[in-house]
Length: 362
Image 1: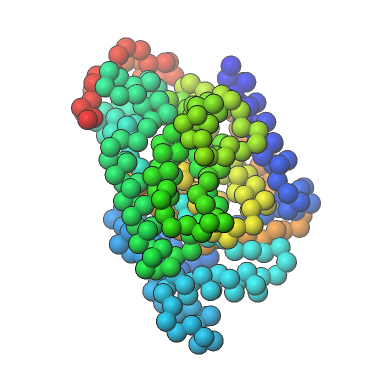
Image 2: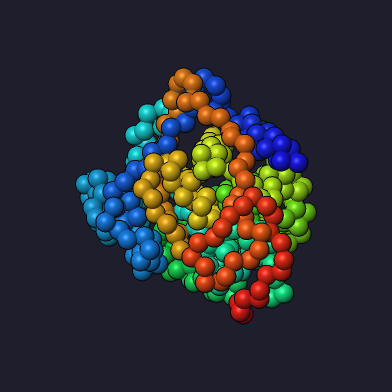
């Protein structure tokens, strides 16, 4: 079974690679860099844990742009000036180079987040995360908690204000992780906004925008049928399997492997989607992986938070640096539940047993 899941990951990465356009064939590859100097999240002095993007105009720095020099648009908002700058960057870019702005949002608070907060991270990681839930809630493929819904709706209100007052460029394409908390977050965040008729909110579900593949049941997705039935307006990418063939109990991918699949899914998006402004609803771990691929500084996101990143993508002739997918590694688990107050855990590789205590989540 373990080998089957490892082979499924290899096949999925290969299929994602094959599905990309000419830019991704063996004679060339895409190199990504972050264009800094436009957002506070790019600055080393910004404290990620205390930063609130909704009180800082998404983090856009209030400054002049090179395109301001022509003097033809003196009364523009900062977002309109930035939009002109991005347009100019793409117009001046040599063949094989393009610029895109990624709006990456982390899902709102989920029941798995509440459970981890209650049990404590050591006990959660080694024992409770491998269970389906308890008598109060289910955290397998966790849904948003009431707090998470409130967070996503607050971001919706923020987007509405930014569209009206700041003339922020709305996403031209939308992508989401297949996990329920992201499917819900995307819906709450973007539904009902004043979007261009030609660019409606109709997200595409992409397997590789999921959270780090681990033995935690919160990271095991539901079936394609479940997604279609519960989110009928969403598109599901071609090749998306009916059941989750990548998740393996008590095993997980390495950070290096997560970065490989993050690179693959970015390659697919950048090679097939001509949009300049793109929304990605995902997870803290996966967004962190994407930031590594983009050469961005580490910038952790609280639940419900978002980060914009201006990306320069250059198609480079030649063969991409060699990468190899590693086998999943066993998780550190506990054979019995640790104390809720534990600060460390005694790990084995044996499956956990017993019933969890009931956290007061509601």
